[in-house]
Structures are given as C-alpha cells and as structure tokens.
Amino acid sequence: MPAQPDLPLAAPELLDSMLTRKFGPEVQNYFSGSPLNRLSFLRTDHAFLAAALTHHSTAFVAVDDLAPAARDAANLAYVSHADLSAVIGENPFAKTEAEMIEAYNSKVASPLILFLGINDKRHEGFEYKAYKGVPYFAVDITPKGSHEEAAKGVIETLKAKNLIFLQGRSAMTLNASDAAIFAQARALLDWNARNPFCSGCGQPTLSVHAGTKRVCPTADLAPGASARGPCATRGVVSNLSFPRTDPTVIMAVISHDGTKVLLGRQKRWPTDWYSTLAGFCEPAESVEEAVRREVWEESGVRVGRVVVHSSQPWPYPANLMIGAIGQAVKGGEEINLEHDPELEQAKWFDFETVRVALKTGTSGLDEAPGEGRKEGDLRLPGHTAIANQLLQAVVLGGFLGGETKI
Ligand SMILES: [Zn+2]
Image (cartoon, rainbow, N blue to C red; front, side):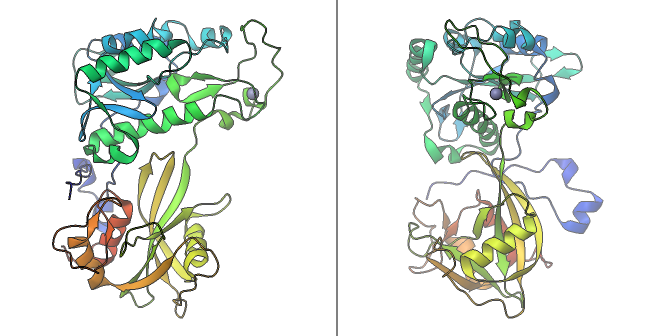
C-alpha cells in the first residue's frame, strides 16, 4: 500500500486552551493547514503585488490544466519567475486595478496569475509595509489563447528539468502543506476557467483581485465589440463575481444506544468498501438539518441531535466538507433504501468492526487494502479523508468521551 501523507500539524497555540480542554483538540484535515498567510486585504494593492511577483525569493506553482508541476508525488515544484516569464510577460500589476478594467479588451487573454499569500515563517528579503515573508503565486500555464506557444515552451522546459505534472486526484499524495497550497490554487484556477462570462448579464469578464474576483467591465476595447449594457454585478449584487465554495455535509451516524455506526456504499466502490454518508447542503438549510435530511433520504434512518466535528476543504472542484456526528432517534434506526437510489447498501456496523478496519483496512479507493486485513473484512477510506477522522472520533472514544486509541 502506498504510504498516506501525514496530516497538517496543529499549531502550538491550538493545543492548550480552555476550548481544547472542554472540546478536545482541533482536528486538522488534509487540504487544510496551509502555511501561507493569504493577506486577502492586499489583493487590490498592485504596488504590493507588482513587487511580490518579481522578488527573487517568490515561489510559483505552475499549473497546466489543473495539474501542478511537482518534483515527485509528495512535493510540489516551486519554480521561479524566470521559469515562467515567457507566459507571465510584462508585470500585469504595473497597472492599477482601475486601469486594468479601463483597458479591458476581451480579445486579449492574459494568463491567470493568482496570489496565494506569503509564508511569514520564512524571510528571504521580501517585505512590504508591516508584512515580511516569501510570496507565493500560482500561474495557469495551460496552453491556450495568445500565450499558447509560450506555455507549451514553458511546459517542455519544466519537463526537461525532470518535473512532473500531477494529474487528477494523484495530488492527494502531496505532503500536507503542499496539499493545502495546491487546494487553494486548484479551486481558484478552476473557478476562473469555468467563469469566463458574467452570471449577471452574460458578457465576458476580467479576473481581478489577483485571481480571486471577476468583474464585468463597463466597456470592451476589442475591435468590433458591441456596447456593453448595464449589469447588476457592478452595483449591489457583487457576490456573483466571487468564487463559490459549496458546503457539503458528511456524517458519522451512531445508533440511539451509541454502540453502532451507520455506513453506506456506492455500487462503483470496491467490494467491502464503505464510508460515511454525505451530501450537499441545500439553500436555506442549516448544517444540522442537511445531515438529518441526507441521512433519511439515503438510508431511511432518522437522526436527532447533530454536532459538528471538523471541516475539510475539498478542491474537486470547490467544496467545504462539514464533518458531523449525529445520533439516531429511538426507534429510527430501520434502514430503507427506497427513497433515493444513491446508495447500493447501508448498514449498521458495531464499533469493534470499525476499529479493526481503521487499523488494517484503510486505503485510497483505487489502492489495495492495508496489510493484515482479513478477506471479507470491512474496508474504509484512509486518514486523508474526513470520513476516516469522523469514524476515529466515534469509535475510539476521544470525541464522545474516553481515552481509547488504536
Ligand atoms: Zn455582467
């Protein structure tokens, strides 16, 4: 079985506090725990961005069609401005944001340059006002538009330096800190690529705020462009211009007597593989209500009290998984798969079976199960999945009281 990457380490200040003593340690899920300070309030400060983009210490994540350049399966490759200068071209932050919007030309496609933040634990000479650290950017080097040939050249040069591009979910082998940096880059590059047109009026949009907002300019300097009409996003409906994060609930449901946990499986999963139930939060629904609705729809089980355990950013494409633990109401444990065909099976498992599976039966979906697992035993997701953390919280006792550890 390939080694699963470590999870982010909790910062020391999270470990000893009144809240930790009362509610236990905060769970740091995979894809969270970025070492970067995002400095979101500086995304409109082009003097800052222009200086950060060209500083000698600045680290760049190069991303081709959502696949990041990497040294190997565990480590991103942080390349330099010089490596990407053919794609980046002139410093786009030399103009102010207002000047960029005024000069908007829908026929000129600039590469997306996304400011990720600064690592303020490292200092290699960059500082701006009160902020010091190593700046990080992601650049979309997908060959397209007017920089297609330049991007192809950059990709060939990076490959000649023995860098690889991690495709699809293979980025889940990255070390915890690189995984969090990649998650931020992937979610925002994907959102920009999917939103070239305004959702208010349908006209082409321009990326601003260093890759974290798209605006609908009032004019387009492209030859032959028709006059642009009014648009609600230029007034009060600005939320249409910002990236989406879609909340998803994922929940370990325990039986009313607290001895069993409800798991389900989809048809396409390997034999014996189960996980916790999950689903999207709907508009105008609390997290607790979404948990109760999803569990009833998928399994027929009726859930009472729900508590939130932890959350996990999930950049495929832009989810926030909200991990919860719920308890079935008395007499509400009967399983009924007739409402919603999403699950092939849902079953109650006693805690000991889940404890054994957490020890010997965890892996990624397309990997072989862990060593020591007996044929036919339950299989579960590995510890980079929040489902695994929820099950640990339930069956090892920490979250529900007690001290049991595997
Ligand atoms: Zn518009």
